[in-house]
Length: 277
Image 1 (cartoon, rainbow, N blue to C red):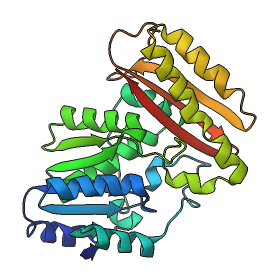
Image 2 (cartoon, rainbow, N blue to C red):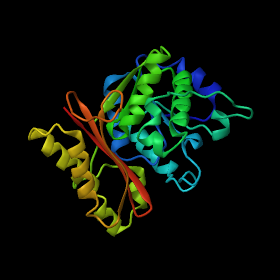
Image 3 (tube, rainbow, N blue to C red):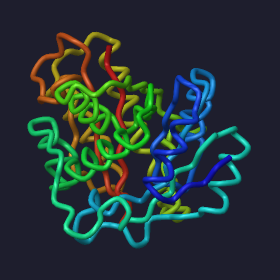
């Protein structure tokens, strides 16, 4: 397994890789969610590239960039075991050199949900992904359903800018009690970890009501909100029942919809979603 830090070096190494090339972009601190993407990439491609880069431009003022969990030694050991061919680990200066001043903005999709609560977040996501796709030139790139809006934004960017790659989205990997696996779960203390199951319970309630025939999106949002408010440690950022493609809020569900939410448990902000279809 090669570990490369410089853009010019990985571009040269990329020429040696056997097609097709699978790519999994990560911010490190790898968990089972990441590993599910890596294993799928390994199964579907002859070469696998992983990036580890905590992208500063997708963190807003006061967010957790400096404290974001990192464990490079453990990450590299896991990637070696999973059979990665190349790990790209650039510095922030390598990705954003002095005088860097070009940005990718996906407009309407990025203004909703996470975008409304984290201004500039998706500008950072879209820009770094565009750069990584241009550097690695993968055949396929792999993302998790937990970050559903991120996937939608990236797919829109790829379509609008005619990028030549396919995005593969895999189901959210969960703990035994339903909590979506996330690097930020490490911030939770024992009591907060127990309280965090309220996110999945709210989504499960929505799925149950929908499967019983409820199509009034306003009622579904109300039911999710009511359940979340029963957890004293939970503070709601948003609760959404939106069109899966446009992320516009729905009044009535007539096509596949995305039920999503963002909730702070203590000081830790968690997101989750399910697709109603």
